[in-house]
Length: 235
Image (cartoon, rainbow, N blue to C red; front, side, top):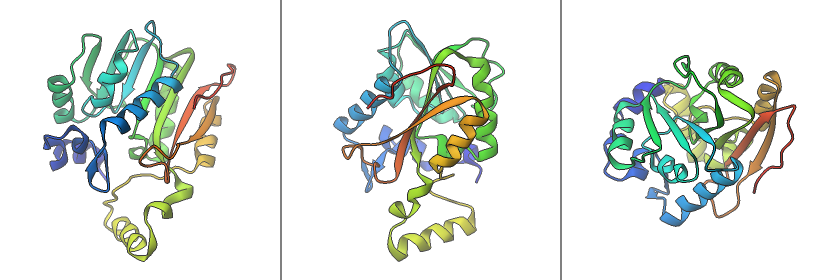
């Protein structure tokens, strides 16, 4: 699946509803303000937000979450390869301390600074294992020591059938697989993510979401940090 083309050409990104633009719906209903607030609070807790910290938000989408998070950081560089989503972010979710950039998370050579925190929210599913390995390799250059990386809302490979339920759901899964047009990209088993983190000398904490998060039954949040630093996972 060519996700770059998808997010540049999908009809979803032209929707007037910012939640629908980036697929933040549950049973076809957009997330409520309360649900968005829960997500923002979790992100801020995991990343130990501080007004002196600099954040790199990769695959930022339309900036709906970025703009809310940015109020708690000194500066945010927000990157996405979708031109229409970045245009929407600049138009609808501008902040003085946020720079929205059209760019690819797999090509970060143009970033010449380091960040205290890196966020990849609701987007890690679009990275294949090979691409994720390349992405993790770039953290060594752009992440300060100590620094935190949050992979938010990761599709759980151990709970695929909690999403594709019963016979109709399983049939949809295999049809999408054959057509190479999945609704969700790569499903990450926590064990596979641990292996990837270890390869890049990163500690990994897998945190299952509470029931107040819409997708708690098939997604989790993963927090990364260099192995030579200790930290306490947020809840």
